[in-house]
Image (cartoon, rainbow, N blue to C red; front, side, top):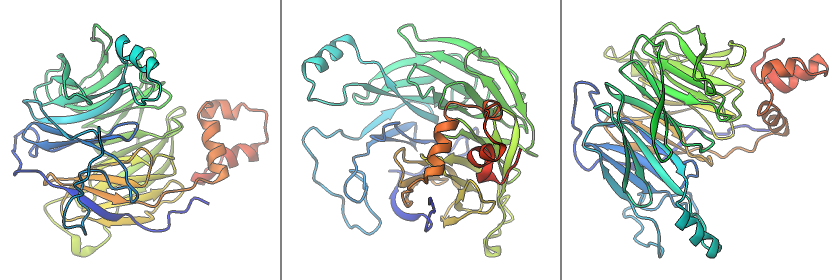
Length: 410
């Protein structure tokens, strides 16, 4: 079975060093957090144009180096020899989006690694930052050096996404109503501008198989683009208000979108079918606040194994959902409004960002996937819905393997 037995448990918190700077475009300067794909670093846009890079060195209780647990009176002072150190990157502009990616090592480093095979981790890691003035800066994580400065957007760069394959393709979204595709080879050039959105573009997500790009904006439609031809494939219609967040499942078979209409919609991106809607309702009447839309959604993300979703909303709740259920299986209350959430790549931890600039880390139970889920995940990683329909296997088997967790039938 893959049952999540209990809700998230609050464990750690990061606090900004000084009060937030406010800006008319963002109202609050801290907006973005990210784990590196290998889970070795955590990036935090902590205000005052500063991004803090924190090495995430897991100990026995999965506590990152330099973090203070809520029940501890002091930080652990011990540091291993050669341990990576925290870095502060000054961008000179308000930072809206951050994204990590592997980066090819230079020939000299590859030669050194060949002669020193006992030394691991010779690849470089980079962090892209989307700024208030439309610029994108690319930094090398290990050294803290600025590598590239990309220009093209005419307004705030709201979100960034690298291709999971490590092919150095970067997608950026902006309040200038465009998405831009960048190829970060030695020439580091913009290769495409995607037009079609009529309002600010909030978020983008590249499917793990690198075939499809999803983008959402201050409008009801969800756009799906081909990552091969950089053309619009289709629009998904179903939300009743602006769509603010989107993410592909780890096996690329599903897409989730979150909207101000209080719903998360789970889609089959290949058929445009709505698999399920997850409605966010008020949990506690005492939490009612006339100053906010109580369940306006801010962010949605998949767990690393693809069995669960996490969502954050203006009602100050982190919710955990199982894909096959229409109601949350767990809640975690916070003391302030939530901006975004993300899972640690290896599971067990959820990071949430709060509007006052604090970052909170929640321990979530690790999940052992069922054999059925593993079989479904393997199948969906290389077959689309159409291809499954065409398989010469019994209809009942198709239902069980492909759509049973959503209560759907062909």
